[in-house]
Every structure is written in structure tokens, then in C-alpha cells.
Image 1 (cartoon, rainbow, N blue to C red):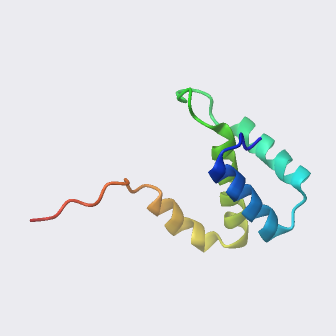
Image 2: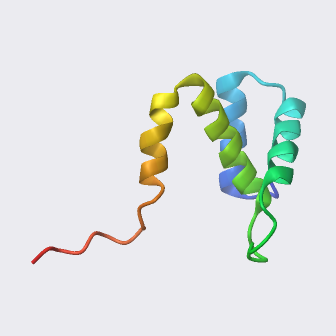
Length: 87
């Protein structure tokens, strides 16, 4: 389900290590979250499994530390380019 994507594999390993969740339960979570992702306007090279792994991690963070999710969501809105100089 992680499509041999290095980031998704690393996230899965870290999640399993941190939570102690059995791998089959994690895969079930990924399948559930991937099925809930919107299918419209999605590029053909878009990885639903990577997006699902992020969503599973965000779900856990929302449950374990909701206050930490807010600044993370805010930071996710920033573009990767540096801010322009005001001068």
C-alpha cells in the first residue's frame, strides 16, 4: 500500500515504531484513508498511499495533541519558495 515510496515507507516504519500498532491494522487504516481521499482533480502521478499515510499521522496527532496540529496545518499552507524581501 505504500507503493515502495521511500517517504511513505519511512513514515509507516516510524508510525509503527512509535505506536506499536500491528502492520495489518496500519494497512487497514491506510486503505480506509486512501478510499476517503477525493478522486476528482487528482493528477495521474499523485500517490494516494502517500497522502493516506500523512492523513493517518495527522489523525493521530489530532487525537494525541490537537494543539500541535494547528501550527502544522498553518505551516503546510506556506509555499516552498522563500519569502520576498520587503526592500
